[in-house]
Amino acid sequence: MHTTATIFGPVFVLVFWTFVVLNCVGYARIRAAIRGAVTASDFRLGESENVPEHVRLPNRNYMNLLELPQVFYIGCLVIYSTNITSPTLLVLAWLYVVFRITHSIVHLSYNNPVHRLYVFAASNTALFVLWVISAVALWGRNVA
Image (cartoon, rainbow, N blue to C red; front, side):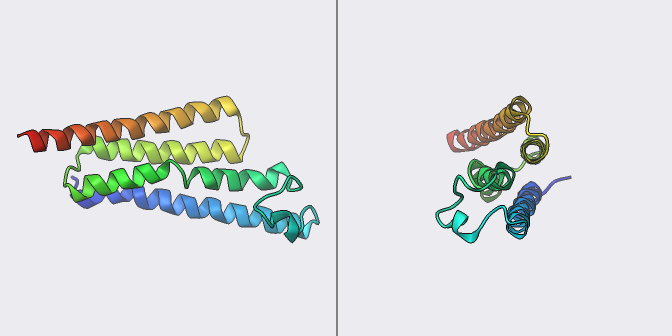
């Protein structure tokens, strides 16, 4: 059973995951500073070339979570505010979130670019289909 507000379940999970990754950024930076691998000046204009790759990686993933997911958040707000929540849209929203979390896990662990690409493409496909179905539902409502 679903209600209009159930579309926010995947939204809350992705927001929570974004904060998890943000904490990974802080952890990596503090750990590198304690070990003497970086100094505060290495972050003066963001992350300089002096910052080791393993310290930059969590920040890059965090930035990924602030880019295209914004389109997801807007889509979910459209779905909620227009009352077009459906089981199909809920499944697509959850798939998007699962693929984004999987993308982060691949990126932050063994970081295979091909695997990352597959998961990233799958997430984008789920998001695109979510928007197409939403547009069709709204268009059909306005035409009738």
